[in-house]
Image 1 (cartoon, rainbow, N blue to C red):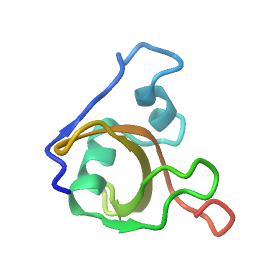
Image 2 (cartoon, rainbow, N blue to C red):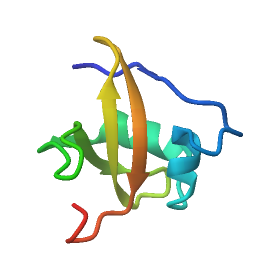
Image 3 (cartoon, rainbow, N blue to C red):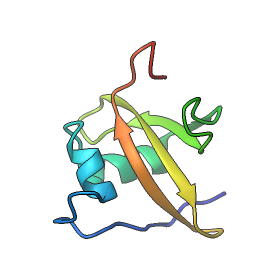
Image 4 (cartoon, one colour):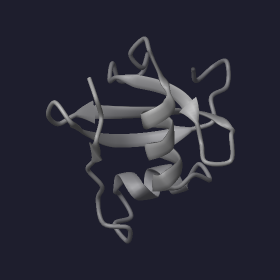
Length: 87
């Protein structure tokens, strides 16, 4: 799968994916960078959704959980710096 587009909710939507990522100190750009340069992992244990580990813009390794929209588009659900209990 080649990801070329990310589907984002409105920045001001308090329940949207942009806010879920911001709650973990990350940006849309961090998530997009990790999706583009990351390595797919086993699905998320909590949701069963696809998971990628990759670098944020500043080089931190982050996890991005997403839904597949189509062959080129994903909808990031959240992104965070993984810990043993979350990874």
